[in-house]
Amino acid sequence: MNLATTTIQNTNLMVNVDDLNSIREAIPQHVTLVAVSKTKPVSDIQEAYDLGVRDFGENRVQELLQKVGELPNDIRWHAIGHLQTNKAKQVANLAHLIHAVDSPRLFDALSKHASKPLDVLLQLNIATETSKHGFSESELLHALDNGLLSNPSIRIRGLMGMATFTSDENQIAKEFRTLRRVFDSLQLGDDFDTVSMGMSGDWKIAIEEGSTLIRVGSAIFGSR
Ligand SMILES: *Cc1c(COP(=O)(O)O)cnc(C)c1O
Image 1 (tube, rainbow, N blue to C red):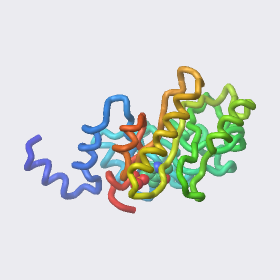
Image 2 (image 1 turned 60 degrees about the horizontal axis):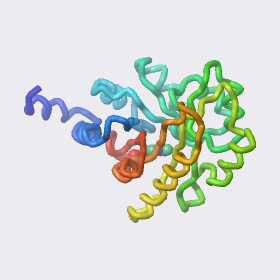
Image 3 (image 1 turned 135 degrees about the vertical axis):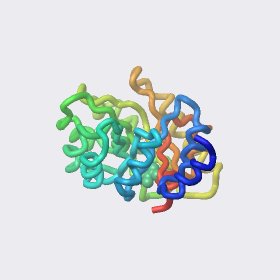
């Protein structure tokens, strides 16, 4: 494809193709890019799909259910948002990966509805904001030690976290480092291989600090 053609095609796209491509080129091979499509229409997702993206992230169950029905079935859907226990059933067997398991209660609810082993991440609260969800480090260790996060129908694939919303890159790096340190300290088996951290504003820092999966929305689809 020559440059002129690319430019003409891109003018009608909602996806920021240049930004998408530069992220894809910048990330190491072992890092997965999840395109966060929450609030964006199916047509935007289809555009990204046509550009080869297969991993998409949604944070609302209703929206996820609707989009799954309207889009190609080889998409890997990532449930990235806080999940209420009463929504566990709807998400359990739809999502490729459930990123935000933040309590033993939710873990139990998911295990009840698993028709095949479910892949999940445990959310660790690494931010200073009280509004953010997730286990504290001590809560997580307690839950693991007491067998509260153990069920044959659930595979714990790793940890997920969100850094504080701040322009202080040192603080962001420090929080991501904490997530990676806790991940490294846990011995949860060969399937435990995923560190989900990094969004539009901080994915570069996250990769430097050991992310294996970044969740990028606005840098690909524009602001919400
Ligand atoms: C919205 C969201 C993202 C993507 O945020 P951007 O800043 O748009 O990249 C990533 N992770 C979670 C959990 C989100 O809710």
